[in-house]
Length: 76
Image (tube, rainbow, N blue to C red; front, side):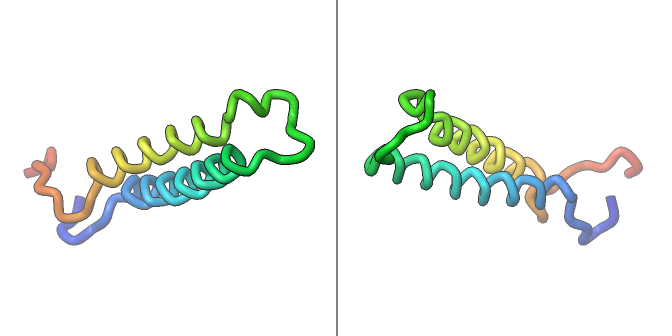
């Protein structure tokens, strides 16, 4: 990797983190204010779980591929 280059995986992590946060917050809102006509598996709260999974994966990607981390490259 060139000096000063930012890995594409960092931006994937940011995308996962933002989407996970939005989905998680929407799930929490639906948990607090349930809809009048819920969908079939509403009691599972899938948007809360998947939002949390995306949020955690996004955090891991952002930490691992953060710009400025000192990594030893294979060509050095």
